[in-house]
Length: 579
Image (cartoon, rainbow, N blue to C red; front, side, top):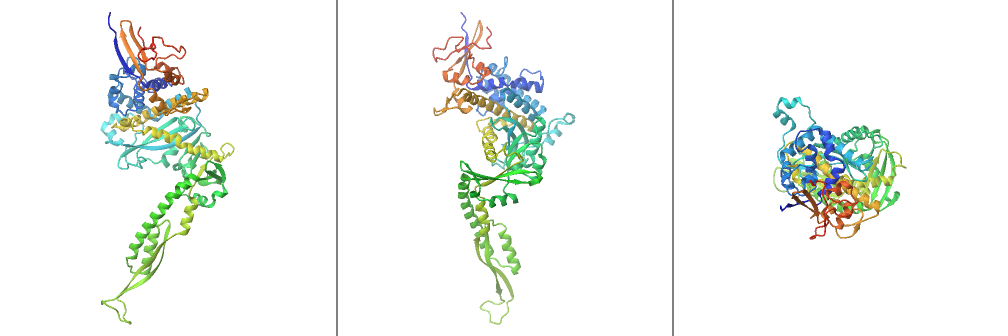
């Protein structure tokens, strides 16, 4: 009797990732958008492979993808007939090129829209923010690259190419070139629905209104669409452009004269207490010619934090002013007016201090020694004498503003959007789009994937990262929603029951799930190993597509082949069995 060939393939949590991709039809949607390529691995399949690589949290570069999939069930995760060797850098690079040619923002928007439609998620309330991604290596400017390709490239129109260059670095690496990513996430589910790659020197105040307009046009969204954005949006020109096109909520920059006046005009005692350490009051505004509501908010926690930093800033400012004053006091000027102008120039740099001084004459004589009573000076210099003192008005103004900030919205219906709800919506910025950026910048997440040399492929790679975030967020949303609907919980990392687990924790639970592959005369059979009751409880929270990736039929609740006697886990006949 012929001995069957036996091997194991590592599945771990990748079945969850592949199952969610299958549920939203990621491969089919990408291939529909891009069109046929007459290659063994379609663009959709290559895209799903890169998403699986990204959510493997191993930080492998794209050219090492075959190595990553060498011990994985590639046919189960991506498609029949696909091998790890097929997923080489040429295959993935060409797929990135195709995605760029179709427009990474447009492709992403269609896939994300499909995903939200499948999961039945409404999204009229949105969060928009940006972040920079620091990059290593040399990147050709788009013009130089087009020129190097000759006239053939010029005849074929293509989407705009970003410029990888220095700009304001949110990574605090101004020495590195960068690209910028604008991201729009849903308010409640924190799902990324829009992604836009921008040049490294782009600025939020100019890109935000353009991104919003592009989203409204592409998604055919109406004026009821509600954006929550940081203060970079708030300029007279920007809110004027968006007037009547959408609703928005943002923070008012403290640098505006009207904002400074309001911050110092109303003390906490005159505000309404909202609970949780917040007070607030609402006033009207017509800034930029747009009628809107301003809400002045006082935060006890922010006040305590700012009090500590304020004292440090005041001491540092005094030290700097004293140092500059000592330098002024050692000098002489040709005239009294010149001396006063020098002091006035120095005071412009002192935010919380001023000089209490006088200017006195310093006579100089031709001969050394004590001059005679009637001797006339050869020339007279002028010197400042005095000290640096606190500017009481500036200090008081600063102290009145501490712990306060202003929110603004063009939604004039207070019943639909009460002032306390404005605060809660703005606070969600940190748990939606900013959480997405923290995820994308995790060193374990696709970190080496940004070592691509072409700006076009970089744009497509950023879209792949966004797709990975979308798949992750959809899976986490599905788990939490199902737990809530069933009034169930799962244990977290310390063993406590929770109805809001992180998907990263569930991924850890699935470490060590293997597939035993036996190839004999009757064909190929597959059995899942190490699948325990806790895994089945989690799989039951997902749909059939995820469960099938683990060769488990939740309806039968029993294996179709005998359980492995060594680990007590059930086996199941694979959907890819040949016999």
